[in-house]
Image (cartoon, rainbow, N blue to C red; front, top):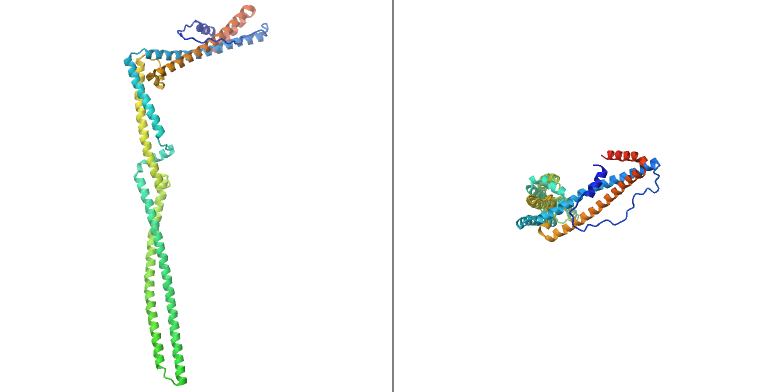
Length: 395
């Protein structure tokens, strides 16, 4: 069908729309050829082509608007079909619609109270799910053991310093005792020498002095000897204790290094910085799984009830039952139905208004071409050829 046929078809169409359709009453600037020299071939052909383009544009708009108009009319017809159903069918429709509304509300509530877990965190926990919760326990035990090992190392280090301090004390004491021994012997020899000199000079009996000097020296040396050997024995024990501590420290250091390496490996494996972080992520992951399972169940329930509602609407001869999945409240509340109907009527009025405008514009362009053909018959054949070529180009 050519452009002219489409325009005529629109004017022949009958509508059953009983609403008070708004008619366009604005004044549009019509095609004018006041300044066009029709005897000039170039101006004449440009003007005729402009008329054809106006008809083509109007025709395209009419096709688009007509499809939308029919769709809106179909929606209104579907509403009339639903309202014409018996009460038993309406009750079934309300039942499924109420279930869908309830499920949607529950899903919104679940989304509002849901703890948000970043997708990358969820994927990370999903990868290590097979190691949990034993992985957390192992990491926690390694961290606790690390604390104990550090305490042991600190205690052993303290004991080692104490032993070294005691060793220095004993070594100083033994050195002092050696000095005391030297001084005591020197003093005794000096005293004996003095007594010998005095005895020889004054012819005195100094044997008692010798005895006292020897007794004092012997007593002092005996005490120093005992103390020295006690210190020496204690020094041996201290050195053994130091050696034992060194061995213990080496053992603890090996455990510390091994446990540190284990911790670093576990941190990398689970991509966390501590067992607390892993525990928090695991708890969130478990909660997230619960929510996802609830959502999955809700989606299944939604799919079931939507399929049941669509099937029921199809049995009511509804042209597009899927549209009602997005406006189920209208199947429950008559006010919603009235509002939707009112919106559709307004839409149809607007479409009708646009269609009438485009039909008028096309008709004016068509009349303009016919008028040119009638007034300038000498160019009629060329003008009709232009019209034919233009329609072939659009075909």
